[in-house]
Length: 104
Image (cartoon, rainbow, N blue to C red; front, side, top):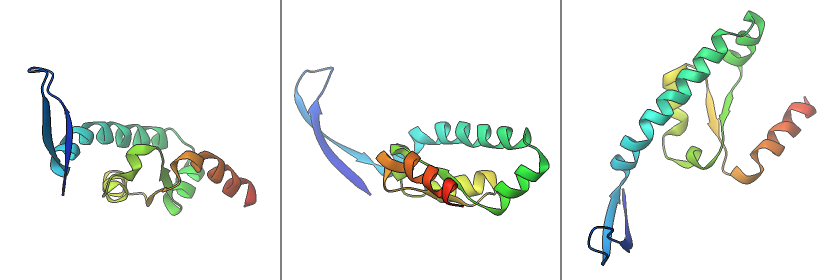
């Protein structure tokens, strides 16, 4: 998929239309997602075995605007081996998550 946007070409200072493709966005965010996955795995490796078992049998949640990219859940599942969910309600994700934890 792609999106056409209009903006100022910084080299010519002229208005120009640009087409941005999903593959180009993915190429930009993959290094960042790889680093996040690396930190998730490193953090889990520092946890007590009981905590690791709980995490592996449950779900991790990726929040923020970056979680809205198509394929984010699959990327982090493939990178960490842990079921991953994203949220559509980015602005309230922390509050919703806290409510779920306290409601257990």
